[in-house]
Image 1 (cartoon, helix red, strand yellow):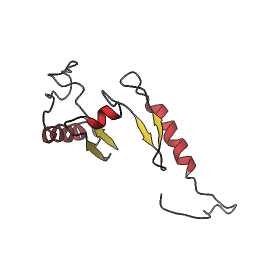
Image 2: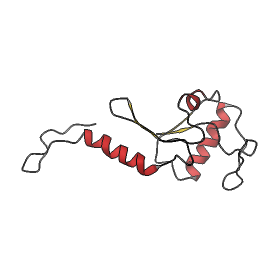
Image 3: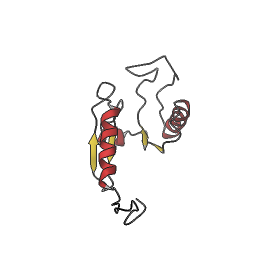
Image 4: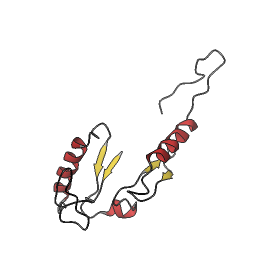
Length: 122
């Protein structure tokens, strides 16, 4: 899931970026929703479920998500991976390894015949 938090590179921020979409930092949750929706579509991320942090930034602050961060919550509901702060601590390869490790925990046992002993929805 993608969680859209405070805009990292708004033109009225400490670190404006003039490449790509140029946006002002939203001042209402509704404005943030509009910017997040455009961002998700423009960056081709619309295949990933996305939610937004409210304008109070409580989620971003609690998870230390600014400017970007990668986390993995395991199937047990516990945090199983926390990446470094972006952009320099942003390591998708580490996240992929953590995802593979998490998925391996849910591997379905296979009999010698090659058929699963038990199949269930995860």
